[in-house]
Length: 246
Figure 1: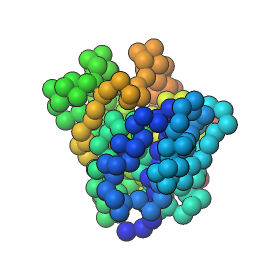
Figure 2 (figure 1 turned 90 degrees about the vertical axis):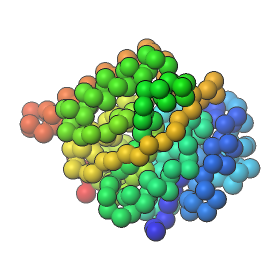
Figure 3 (figure 1 turned 90 degrees about the horizontal axis):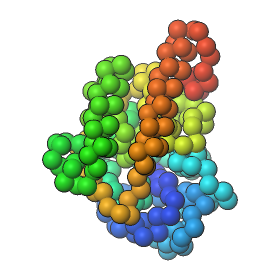
């Protein structure tokens, strides 16, 4: 297996970081990179104590801006595979090696963690009902218009090949939560193979989560990305997000 980088986009994750790292198989991950988005707690101190490679933003750039630094750092350090793990211990990090293996053997280029195997499991895990409804309806719509069959379009647990990150112009994306949707649409536009694996999920007070209002903004971001992709494909408007870099 090539070099694997685990990247943690962090903001005030001091109380959950250690439990997240403890779940990762001991010998998995040649690089463990935490990008701190100007946290006000002890995230950086805890990350350094755990031996993570820490990159600090002097000012808060947002979730998308944090990911941009995560991926650029991983590529600069020579990673062949990159796994994004939220440091809030919401996702079961033990699944990460399976995700990378699917990429390594050529089944997928991108693998997502699917949080929603059944409605009961998702709701029993603490997912709010309104979030479950939005996730199910928007995932159905995006699968339909993009020709995919993913179980959870909105998962924050993701694995990528180096080729994906070198090909997609992710620096052109939003600095906010819309980044995730833009990235998947860029991947579809570029012809990459996207798959998913089931992953247990936990919703608790410490886990990061966006409000209903920000979820609506996130939805509009997805619509904007899809519109930009189609206009770019039809040659009606150039959109730098969909200009492949290689």
